[in-house]
Figure 1 (cartoon, rainbow, N blue to C red):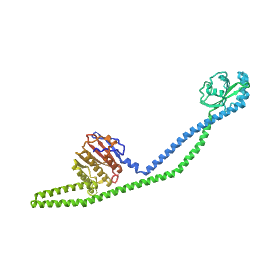
Figure 2: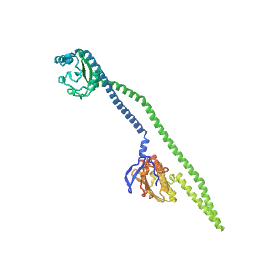
Figure 3: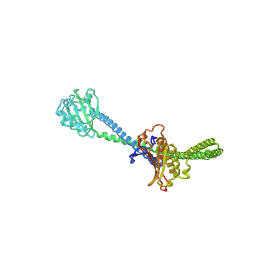
Figure 4: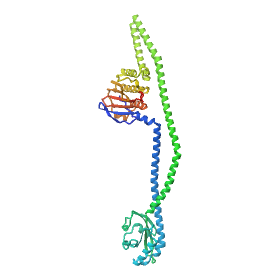
Length: 475
């Protein structure tokens, strides 16, 4: 058989080999049935997916909310630090500046230090510096910095050239911050002037912890509103989702019922067509064949040998048409499947292809009477399709049909010694080749497993595995 298809189940090599040919799973009906016919499992799966989606949404919202709260808190804290520095510069630092301080007088520096430690430094201000435009530190609450000169940053120079308050988050990587502790501080620059008009730079550092405190406050408010909104959404959406799931389950049951009704109707129609052909045209053709044989005998008795030969030829043609119609009846609906049983039905199927270059042999290890009706019909249909494919693509060849019980399963094997084919073409089925598609669909619909072993020049083997129910039938 060489009718590859696009498999409905993933094709994967099985660990067992058949005469050097790896088994390939063409259809796994057990997995398909488990996935499609367990509404409770489906409902749980949908609920779990919804819950996972909700948790993922909460995680994303929480992460984005925390980031937004942190950025907002940092901006607000920087603005607050700038406002605080501006107020301190105007109310405390500017009035306390002297010309002597700008000249580096130690007494002026000590007087300013006492004022700053008394009125400026505290929980909201950690460090204070006063710079000259050339980068010399005139005052610092860290005495080791006084008198040192550092290159002013761009922000410091901008605050002096265009008098304004500038604030930022400092990572304390500059040389001037060698005595600072921690990772970050809020840094503010503002120009101030001495009584004689000389411009100096006032620098103030505030602790970064206030950003964390404010961020936590903002996050608590944001998370409360956000989580309450999400929970409200879940409460409102839950009845709708449950209703939709119920509708889906009802639709699934309805589709299953319609499919079964369609199958039953098709089976009944095939019975009717088969009965009509059997009781009508076939019987009339049989009667015609008998009449023709009688007429041929009568003509021969009267010495009309030519007429007798012609009539016998007509009778033989009628009998040939009767055989064709009976083969067609077996294809349409096998009456022996319900009456004579599966074994006789398989022999009838074998007879239908023997005139088409196929030597079909039936080998039954044991009587298959323990199979349920659906399982017997499945075995019949699979053998029927395999024989059709063999007659179409592998003839002339020999086909062996074997059926045996293996543990809790019944295994059907249909093997031919034809040319075989490359199993890789199963993933790229040529147009018009539907044989393997039909076989896979039959197996999946019945919850059975269908496997294939083939190779170019090595023949083809189909194996159908049907799990029997505990009562002796097949599931």
